[in-house]
Image (cartoon, rainbow, N blue to C red; front, side, top):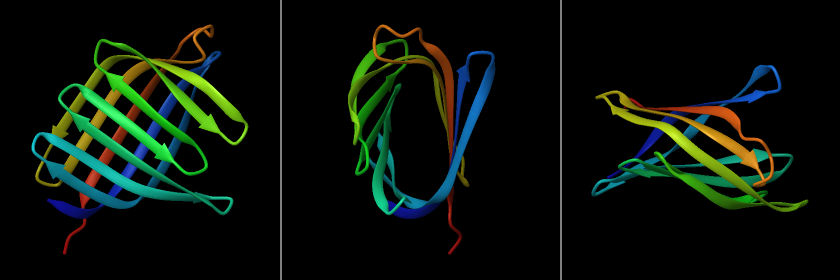
Length: 140
């Protein structure tokens, strides 16, 4: 099953003494195959398009980005994961350690929430972070 949807993403990172929040909104394609589901969307910034795919199954969320940046970040409940992150300025590792991952399905859509620690290279002190993704069906 594939369908066009609206989505909102809210990412929060704790930096030094306060939370920083980033948000994005748009439309994308939601699909399901067996027990796996995904959201695919495109973003354009400064004339460069990046395609992002969020794919989840069970207690694992995978975020694959290609375009201006290239990465496959894996958030797996209770596990520490290291993933390469490639930008026009170089490649570095992102370390994630997921402590909470919940997916709620309703007739109107899906709410995906996670809490994790993130570090940009293994030597850096991990920072607290959260991600909330709301996916809503577009009425026909």
